[in-house]
Length: 313
Image (cartoon, rainbow, N blue to C red):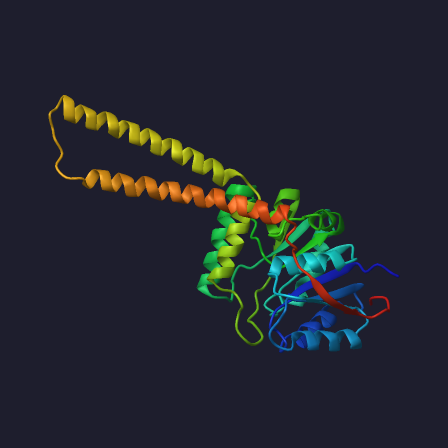
């Protein structure tokens, strides 16, 4: 079997009305220019996405479909696709055609010049303000926790060379975050400007819950800095409490300034109780994720794979 130069991995969720056009645009951009395979991972869609994928796989020799038994999340679906992929480079893109297939060759040209990863940078994003805010927040957190270069935008549209893909797919935890894994592996990354397209049809699956999930994966999955912040915060709170103790003892025994009521006590209890609960929450998140990892919580489960026995284009 010939190894394709490109593996294009697309997680699919409720995109039955888009998949056919996505395949057509990818073929228009790549046919006759480079060998490639298209891997469509159905993340337990509620519509007829899997039916569309099986139809495409039966008609085109370079398409592979993987059907997950339950919704496992975008990053787990991507891991499933990357583990199936065989290409020398892997392109990751969304299923809504906001990532134009016409840019794949541009990403490949840059990445093949010695880069491990090349991201697509969108100067103008045609998406909701909530999604923009979530992306910006996660980018700032990545700068703090995993030393993301300030100028790099962590786009879901990117190309990765095979050696880096081989390192990514070693990740065994139940809560993968592809960009976090990449930044933990390599600093040899770059980006190019790519136009962001309008969604072909339907509505985005992005919501606050998904943004928060990505944030927590990055926040607790790739650094112990949050625990250190909790420790420092606890030390500061203890120091402040000690200083207040000295002040109140001075007021009571020396200045004879007796404070009426319990307002100060109540405020301090609320403040320090909040700090304690936040710290316990952070520690609990780490312990919970460790517990699930130790008990081998599966990242995903594939119920079916459909593909042609012929070589890719």
